[in-house]
Image (cartoon, rainbow, N blue to C red; front, top):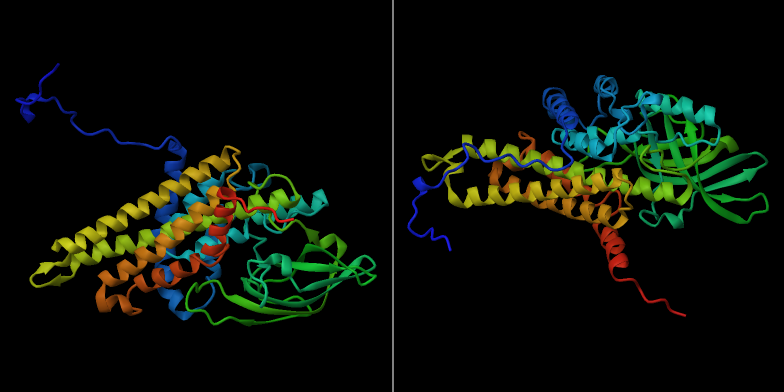
Length: 412
């Protein structure tokens, strides 16, 4: 048996540099996409966010145009429709980079990706998919209601059939980009001509940007964060929608098929993207904290020299890397065609709760300066808190996960 007890470090041949570990899904193309998105985020998105977020106004049109020029509204749309033809992995990866500077910008690109294009008419579908990829068909989703959030089955907004048209009445809440976008996607309970309640269906209401369709009025919701995307409380009064305006609710190119499967795939994609957005926010808080601890001097030394604070940074960095590895793994599986409802819920749950924790730690590291609007850390903190709520609360994700791990007994 080889005895190494008496060998010294000088007797051991070491490599000149440890090999760099690369995940199996890393490619040169993805590295180039990442570098481009990161440069755009730091050079264009971050300065805009620092200037505009505190005014609580919408994302400037010029920044929307820059996103469109880079193809970010069509990441998941096939190249034959003018999209980038990429997968969930790239979509999430770009979303993390944009969220590192301003989560709202990573959120606005989700209003593209083929949303509001799944019409029965193939010509109409093709036309709108091309517009979506080009950033000229950016919409809003009117699903939630004052009494209906995650429980979409209890939707009260009605679409009353009158011949070959529908009359929409009701109220919707949390409709981001409803005034600024090109269309509103409205989920309604169909009421047949006989008065009998029918299925839940989704309609597209075309409109001009910076306006509401006839019969729609709205008030902006006064939020504590997530500025840049204005969220609306909408009232629908006698809004006319044709039968041809009915669509499947999700238009992600990654969502295969139609019907419930497309809805499920769309939700899974949205949850992975939300995990990536949360990682972006947490990473921003980490990077800003490292910079702050190196520049802030107390008791004659930079704060970064104090061991307790160094350990906090180490824990933050480990949690960010862990969450990133998980969402990338799930995105990779989804691109391989693996059903990932449980995994999508898991990565959304863990990444968003991590973001709340890490941004809170970062604010603490900044002390009193973190509790001002002079630094961006408060923006990351406010926005991270929302990630545990939208696209299904953390409790909804826990229900999805637990129901698949521990099925409930059927009661007769």
